[in-house]
Image (cartoon, rainbow, N blue to C red):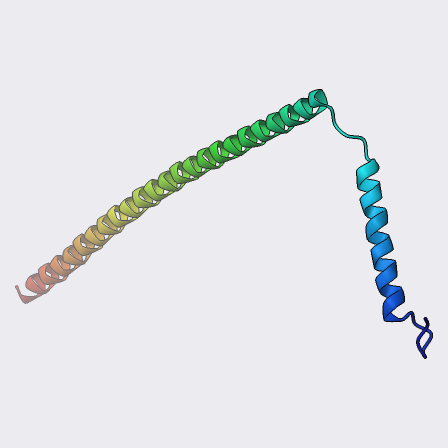
Length: 120
């Protein structure tokens, strides 16, 4: 029965739904059934695929761990190099400061000696 707007009514929709379910059930029931050998082969293939998937996961974890260790070692080397550079820079600055201090002292002594010489 059609409704006023030309759409199928509830009874028609319900009948169509029931027919579709029956067709789907017939399709599933008519599908070829697996023999015991086929079922065993399918299950063993699935188990092999699962084992391969597990092995790939373990390989990925090992690769990630190796990459993390490599990155940590590289970071450690960079930190050590930065520390060496900082120590070298501090030593160079200390040497420069000491040299400047000695130069100032020498200049002061020279001026002092010049004043003493001028008084005599």
